[in-house]
Image (cartoon, rainbow, N blue to C red):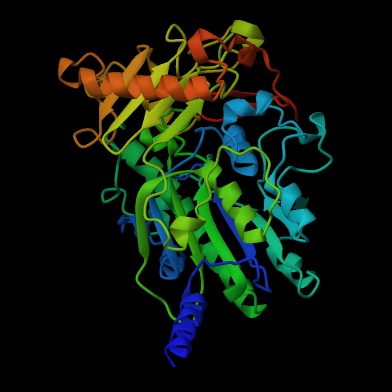
Length: 488
């Protein structure tokens, strides 16, 4: 009798385990990967920001795990997306380390590996991007087959019993925004959570409100995807992963290793008959960890070399801590410096722990936001997306209140930056020369050095100039208020 009870308990445990996919499971799960574009933590109600309405994220959270310390590998679209596809740190991707860089076809992606396991793999809208995949050995976007008609026709045409992996890559909340849409949608600019690195003025509050209205639109599209899964009978056998490629398109955020450039939402969910209280996990996640997690769900046994670590033990409850720290990096974002035939980037590496953020700037003689102007080009501070906030800060850079914030987002930086997070969540005050933090800074510097050495990072010991010489597959100039594409 005891044996019967024991077996019954084990079966119940298996039935109610949210993410347990054993090798003997007959029906492999579908995976829906929903990727936002430039969405920063903490802009969603699941993270406590109730100035915006994201009810579909709330619904997903009731059936899953909300990660509060998830980070993109690089705060720039192309290398971040390439890192997720391959499970590798960007510096291990050759020319794929740069925005619009070449992702070598010989580097395995989860798309290739899941296809071999019988998955139908497709994407809609923004997949691996920006860049021209035709210039790097690919005949299609590295994210999979293009589902040009969208998610619904893809599901309708899927062969019965065939598992799928679908990448839904919205362009929200990337610039440009429609001016005034935030207020029109019911967002009160006076109540929004304005980061301390931005001037508190109506023009910028309105710009952030417009940004948040696109987060709300993203949430509504999640609702449409859920309805299709439910109507097709696929909802309960589909794992849903929601994340962002990098942080918000504002100064001191996107294209920087500060938290608002690298810290992103991450939610992993699978519907069951009964909703639960959202599970929260505070351990660190690098989005390169998604690739091995996808492979675990898909039953892929033969693995390539990976830097990512599967999240499955945490999701299954076997572990509570995933990573104790994350390593972050950035190379060339936009073409905005004349050196190396406009190829000079702003190379950085960082280590982020619970208490501190340590950043190494390898070429502090360069402008982190790009040169203000480049002769014979329309580029203006080209590593900061054009729009109302950029315009306001440039035009008011000498105002007493704006001047120090303009310096944070646009001016040159020292070789080392060190931030004490409990006192400085917006990374405003560099304590690298503060004697009180000399020891923790030294420890983090050593840990970063060790990681770079073990990783064979090209920037180790001052190298890496070849990265600045890698050609871009597409070309554009960032201006005060937008972008000018040269390949269209």
